[in-house]
Length: 194
Image (cartoon, rainbow, N blue to C red):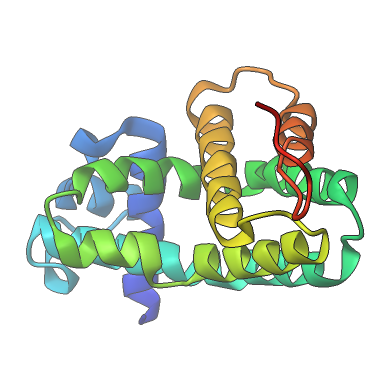
């Protein structure tokens, strides 16, 4: 992304986060950046083009920050409590990227009918896929039954907790919720209750 495109995308993220999807207009981006009216339209002719700039910027920033945190999990986790603590710490660190997460959640709804942009929001950075692979590997080491499915469930739980944190800002004991989920996972060879 060129510097101006990056500035436009960053301003769009801020507008989405602070004022909502309806406030995301070319004119509001121009005003946010102190540009002459019509400047944003030079780089993004349509609303979809503007959203595409933002979606790609979100993907870029997410990849830069989150993959480093996920890689740390590969070496730090020895048991379920470690995994719960690491995941809760990761959620707590989302505060520094709250604008990005709010914008991403709004755009997930906004882009639902646009498969290309929706796909970028969900998959371009492969963060979730990488995270899930790391978690599945950890769960397999801990003899969790159906580790692939449980890893995907764990990623979904963290998405839900992230949305709760960002959208509602309601207090919850995320560590306890995560540990409860993890400690309830069935182990390979464990007898099931009937």
